[in-house]
Image 1 (cartoon, rainbow, N blue to C red):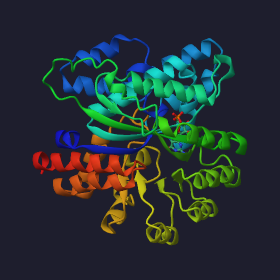
Image 2 (cartoon, rainbow, N blue to C red):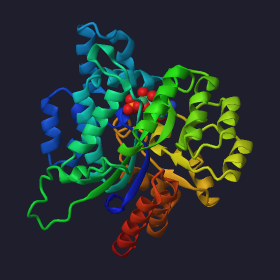
Image 3 (spheres, rainbow, N blue to C red):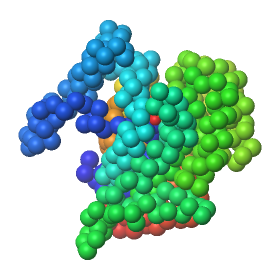
Image 4 (cartoon, rainbow, N blue to C red):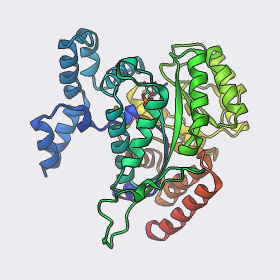
Length: 394
Ligand code: 5GP
């Protein structure tokens, strides 16, 4: 696991609100201090399990229930479950969103999420989030994104490169680096780029608004569009105009594809030739043939797929097939907070399940450079990072 942590990694499929730190969601319990302070591994792991099974979320939901914000009875059984189904995860997301409705919180979670990925030696992060409107808090999709960008700028424990081009070429890391002044220790650096997600609950107009916003924010690190949200909600035709618009504007697209066995939709998704797809759990042979023929890179989220019951055993996962076929894949976390995972864990899981050695893991991590939506200059920098790391790690 330590080697997997050391490995420079590229994260291409991480949802902001699904990656929120446990400790940010949790009420200030003594249990957290116990967790942070204990040196006993078993004790730590038991506490971690208690937290990840939702005990703390339960407290939070209870509080919101008492305030009349949610009907506690509707969510209590979901929170307490260990392996949650996909629809149950979406219930939890609604809870998460109740907590992250104001600009300040959005800024805070963005900062923390970036710091957490950097701590895992993620050197390039494409973070995706759904711009949200919340009239009660005076939030528009644009001000939500401004809060996200403020969060990126607020990171001060690592160097962040996030602005792609243009006059607003602010190097946020220059703001007030905390521990680098006079320090001989080389600070970590992470490239952060943003994908704006269209939620499947949205209307065509709302989806178009997101695409136009992405275009407006191209100089602030936005590099593409994602389609996500509950896969049994919404019609493909609703999102198609916005996705076509994104293509016309030259914005790369990644789609949550085949999370449920809706083959008509899978075909339609492949018809627009997205630059990447995510999950792809229910693709059948003919569909895989097309993905391979079209050379569409696949974002693979092993823990998420297992925890939501898409595969009864990890050994049934299609990773091995794509890997053997030398098809372009990227290991990703999806929702590191919700599923209590890290990208280092995902690499360890893949290696231990599918028998990859260090050379193979290194190449797997490095090959994700090709699938990023970054410009050539960044790709070149990432290649240099891997060249430097190669001597150390293999
Ligand atoms: P946000 O966009 O609010 O920052 O991140 C959470 C949102 O990402 C969820 O409400 C949901 O729309 C989307 N999301 C997170 N994980 C998944 C997943 O596994 N599948 C799909 N389809 N959407 C997801």
